[in-house]
Length: 355
Image 1 (cartoon, one colour):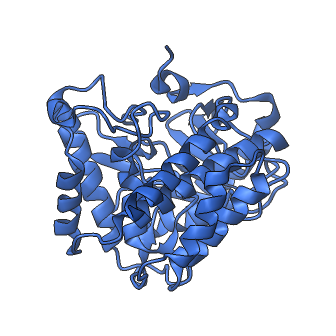
Image 2 (cartoon, one colour):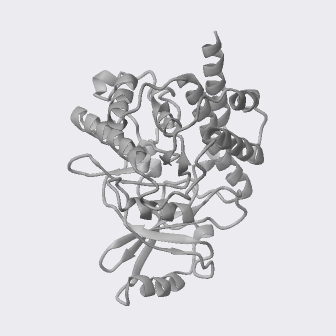
Image 3 (spheres, helix red, strand yellow):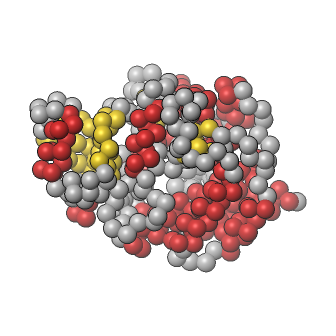
């Protein structure tokens, strides 16, 4: 059986529909980096379902280019300008992010907007249970991940110039509306449980009065880890980041403890975490509370149902891109069968909580 690591790790030749004019890019980047810059090769990273991401090899160092995909796009998706803005701002803090170099709005250069950042050389893990790591490494990786999301939620976004990065109120209501719209715009099959969640979530929103920077897709495979000490070197994939509710962001990250281990590498439920030396859900949450000064999360069931619904909306968006011919990964077509599973899981949480 092919593992997620084998599917998503490393680079490949650029997909034919995502090839661009390398001479145009070379000329543009010479003006940014210096006349000595000269592209040796361009490869496409296998991972990433949304914004195509490329390894740009220069004679002396490597860079990463992230661009909007060409073609018909959902209005709210593929915001590479926002990714560039938040990564650049967070470079002034203790949150680990790559160094950025430029954002290009001129679509004449490679066909769509893009930004350039450092290539961070470290480990990316696609399997939540870390089968190729020893028991000490596993714990170090999870402790560093916990420390990193706490650092992010502790950032004073106003001090680093991100007060305009999103609205400061009603995050949950806006998010439910956003993902409902994306789901409906991309819908390819009727799923009753998703319709039930669309009706139930807006009328059951808990108190929502705290605002921080939220990553929006904070999970193991969106981080690069140091090969020696297993600490997070960089958080990747900021497309869904905004200002919002840190509890929603943290519980999205913690879905891994509630989703079954068979859920496309997104879950660990049913695994012996103690034997693997991976923190339990309770221990991991307690670490976060201590580092951020937050109290125990109330309405856990609501947040889990909401985040599973949101994940289904993300997956359905990928299905929609397959339909429209703009998906950037060959694995994208496999997500259609995943959406109804998520819908059932999310609605089951609501029904169980009501008993």
